[in-house]
Length: 407
Image (cartoon, rainbow, N blue to C red):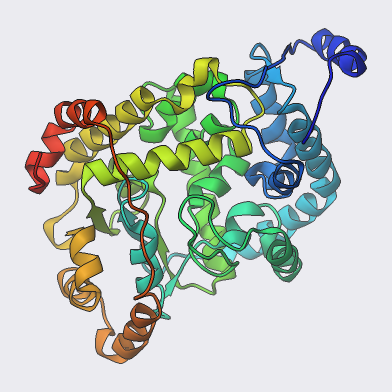
């Protein structure tokens, strides 16, 4: 186990306080996740902010300077800072390369966005659709090394293949460097205006929760988000040699208005799932990721609490239903996760037909081969206590009724 005693860190703590930051020491107890040393060290090497720019890291630290770091998170802070400093010259070189190459890049086609809350089947759907060579996805290299991949893609790919875990911690889905990843991870490395910073700076979760749907934030932050997002996708398009992008960040579910401002001809696939199952699976996701990435301690574990989880789910879909009608009818298709699992080939063909996507007959056999390769995958099963079921039935009644799930 990792043991951090107070006395050896007194000098570090005092120096850190002089810089405006504070420490908090967390005692292990009920509800506190304790990691083995191996898992902790592995978590250091896979922290998603290792690809952060130096300026972005300083901005994040400054905006969280009055929030305490935990002793458990301090080694993460040191490691992330060291890697960011080490990679700074390479980022500067990549910026120079990008400034030259991106001048010639244009979006031949606007992206296809896959929408849906976490744990709703977005990964499975995108992995099927990305078998079609007309699409390009944001992969692990793009997302975890967004400031490096245009100038050093092969090197980044080589490193990531050796440090990434073989499977995701919440569902045992295999991880590689070519499959789709959420571009919101890349945005977290590029700008402070990212919802995913909530998992790192958990004491400031209320602030970062507004970056999920981009509401109640300064106009300058919205402008920065739009500029950086457009730049990121342009850079990915350059590396993918002009392919149409297929993107799957769940936060896009409640950003339709801004996505259409950037890409007026974008197409959307919305996948939804039984809210009871989504909630239970997301609860496991929170419990796994918050301890893995956090450098602050949560206040009474509130950042990963069920109430916060419910509120974010509600906010996402209130915003989605408010903006859904902004999408022209022939550019949005909605599907149920349960239908995708029971008849993946039929659902995919339906998506191609509804969105008028070309080339389905040519790639049908390739899609079917991928589907067959995953037929033995077993999704996690969850048992929920009656009290939570009652609470969910009341909070998510608007979703249960709209999507036809039984209470």
